[in-house]
Amino acid sequence: MKSLSIGFVGAGFNTNFHIQSLVEVRDCHVGGVASRTLASAEKSVELVQELGLGDARAFATIEDMAADASIDAIWINAPNDSRIAVMQAIVDGNARRESPLLGIACEKPLARNLAEAEELCRMADECGVPTGYLENQVFSPTVVKGKEVIWRRAAPVTGRPYLARAAEEHCGPHSPWFWMGELQGGGVMNDMMCHSIETARFLLTEPDADRDSLTPISVSASIASLKWTRPEYVQQLKDDHGPEVDYDKKPSEDYAHAVVTWRDAKGHTVITETTTSWSYMGAGLRLSFELLGPEYSMRANSLETGLEAFFSRRVSGAEGEDLVEKQNAEQGVMPIVAAEASAYGYAGENRHMVQAFLNGTKPDLTFVDGREVVRLLMAAYRAAELGREVDPLDPELADFQPAVARGCWKPNTK
Image (cartoon, rainbow, N blue to C red; front, side):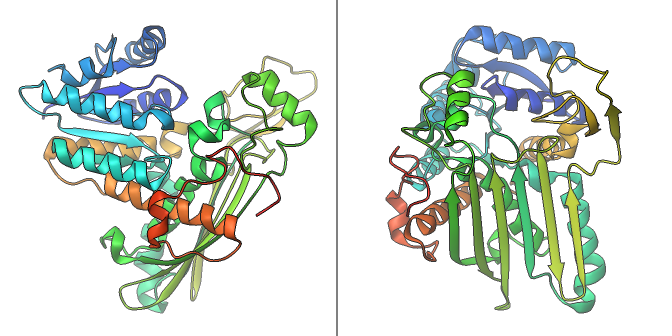
């Protein structure tokens, strides 16, 4: 079978996770990397070569990479505020090719708001290249296996599951732009609740049923700044990321909670509860999932790894993330996530996208599905601002931009 040559747009933390995961993915290699600087692209190319994933090269521009005959598909991992420009460069590059790209995949969230998501879908339709929406947690082994067991063993006997809970929590992002609402599109809700909402929806969806077999009926939500607007942490953000990250003047939420009520094809009501936080202080990144039904339940927690180490006070060393993503300590009892790229679902999602693009089949998640996740996020932001439930199909969401994204949100007020 042909090996899919992937070109990555962006060379940051997320791209490197994707590259590491490809060690476990067949029928693909990395053909190129394009980033804001050639130097950063070259660093990711070095990782590709170190892992034996192909003779990748750093491209000076996104358009040149998309136009190059050695590249078959593009993975967009660039910052949220650049998505439209990146997509335009890919479209322009694709127009220069003798044979079109086999696929364009985009990291979560698809866009900062619904208008941008609609534009990305329009551009993809116009150029005719298949798309994929990169939502890794849907492909994490614990989620996939947990869903399979519940729906195979329990749901046929006592009825479908009716409540799914998902949470993603850690101490905060790596890069400055994540903290800046106007660039990122919001705070922790836009950054991470895209994961939780879609994964909870996936758990409640009957196997082999279309994504739209569940119809969202209403959304309620709340957001808050629990930690990072305290004076000492406002200063810490400035020290760590520069004076442009100023949570005295333009804060983003570091906590978000949303409840989505859905209706299935038989008229049953089911609910997803999701929580995300940049104010969680634990060993590191914590992903948790629950699925509940009439006579059963399942749960998973990414920090319950089955592998841990203990380091006494006499063991000291440099800070790092060699045990778990967003690691917060180097002493005491520490959980170890042995294969993070696999555990978090990167290997699974990339395996799925590679095979879909190679075989010309529609991925389980496309730009259209990513757009619908953005719709729910915008409904959640609007619900939090209004202090009431919101209809996710409300036409006013088409032009809605959260107050956080406009730089005018005031914590602890509606």
